[in-house]
Image (tube, rainbow, N blue to C red; front, top):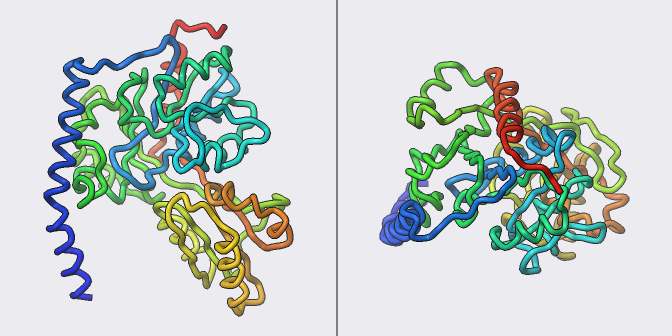
Length: 359
């Protein structure tokens, strides 16, 4: 154990100069935008950006989904993502035949869950937005997924997510740490949400985070936690309530499966994890590995459990999975300290103050 700690410490020391170089590059780029040497472009409709300062999961997808559910009955909603790890390039609008390989797993997840909204992808948001508006001229609000660092587009409302378990104030820059933007960039956020808090977070713990973040007076601060719903079969969508006697093989290809593991610690007596890299493009060999591992488990009441993001990359094996006990567990964000009404009102006021009428 001591050897491992020494090895990690040595690696961090070796990588520290690269972190300094990375920080200088990010700092210089931000100053170019701050001084209008490079210009940001705004659009004549509500644009909401959901992002973070670090790599890894801070709960962006659940927050985008929360916004979709909040707004979709009042205004035509569109999402625009980069489409990370997709096999295509350029702008694309999700359709009936779209796959995760074509548009990325998060956009595919949005498209599956909200078929009435426009789900689009494009590395260059500045070029993608006009194409999106051409394809969907009725669009009344655009949700930019993971675009806080994409400063070519100036969002009307910036929502910054901060993982409660890894506050940016305690982090460092890539590759030594996980920060991909300078800490000072938090000042560009209109709304800051501390995510993945424990549901029983105390007022004292909340106040300690407030004091540590030291946000500007005009910035809105909220706290949220993760809520898991009833798992459903990946193909048939038949629900399955988790029972203590279930033996679970947890299959994940996400950045941070810790909250899901915490749930299983409480929900079942025994589980094993088969972890793949983030955004894993599952192959038939991966599927065989999953099924072989599952068969090796001795329990009489056993299931395979995976995330919604992983499900959109596994569903291509529909013929094999139709009879397999593979279940998907939905995830959602919920606000703590009675913050739901205030947050919802802030978002709707932002939309309503815009003098924009869809064509």
